Amino acid sequence: MRSARQARSPAPRRRGHVAAIVVVVILVLAALIAYSAVYQIDEAEQAIVLQFGAPVGEPVVTPGLHFKLPLIQEVRRFDKRLLAWDGDPNQIPTRGEQFISVDTTARWRIVEPLIFLQSVRDQAGAISRLNDILDSVVRDHIAATELVEIVRSRDWEVSEEDLERAMAVEGDEEILLQEVQTGREELVRSILETAQQQMPQYGIELVDIRIKRVDYVESVQERVFERMIAERQRIAEKFRSEGSGRAAEIEGETERMLAEIQSEAKRDAEIIRGQADAQATRVYNEAFGSDPEFYAFFRTLESYSQSLGKEVTMLIGAESDYFRYLGQIGDFQPLPESVPADEQGDEEAVEGQDEEDEPPAD
Image 1: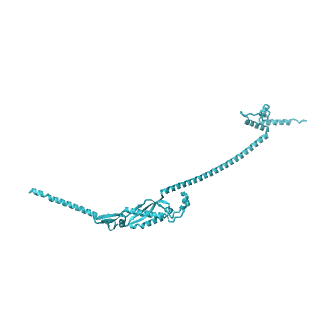
Image 2: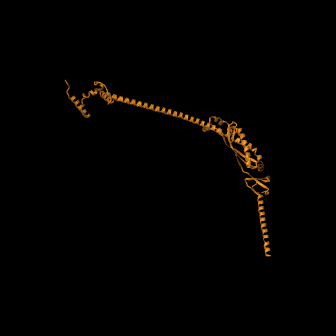
Image 3: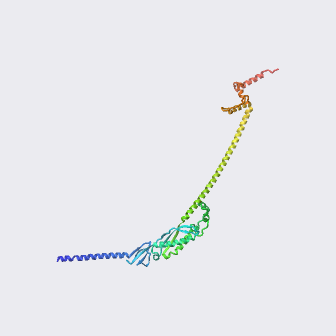
């Protein structure tokens, strides 16, 4: 009896465990189903509900919690914010057949998510379609526009001072000074309007497009750089020649001033020398007039000091007038001892008095 009851007791316990597991599984499945039936939309998002791959209902653009059928419906989310498009630089010939590299960028947004989903599926498809449309529109407009209209604004005025300051190339001066009819802004506006007309069929709004950079292609760049280098060298040579001319002018002016100063100095020196000679002549004349013999004797001695020397040989007769003072050295009488001037005056006065005391001769 006991063994039979002990054998039948585990069966209800197993059934209780199985029932508990089933309940837990059901609750988990119910939670998963409930979770899959709820989805959340962010402020920067918009969504399309798909049922077996086909859109159901209107696009969901209101942020918050929303419901869908679990398991058979899915949510495709799209961004509502501005998105960037950056195209690859394209080599485009202008109206004047000048090849340039144009780099553009644009900003766009998804405004009709249902049309967007049906036409391009996702952002990668939209970028591919924008590449085709925008590159084509930019190429058409650039090819129909002159280069000066692409790089300049209509209200930009170039003055002669700007050209001189920028050292513009002589061949480009006429291009820079010509009047711009449309300009960069009008060109970009025309590209934007043309491209916007093709966007609604894709559920896209093209907000703006800009030309980031315009440059010559590499083959043209080399020629342009060579031309710029040659022009800068020409301008440098011009500056050098102007500097050389100015230097020559300064040197000529300096030489003229130097010659003028030297001429004035020579003139003043000649005047001073003439005045000195005149004064010396006057002194010589006074000396010659007061004592001609002493003057002749002094000048002869001066000539001896200048003409006679160790390495000088002169063949002159002993009786020549040039050596007459040397020949007369023995004939000179010594001068009387000097007498003070006051005693000489007293002696002259005494002699004069004695002469006066002598009686007159009969």
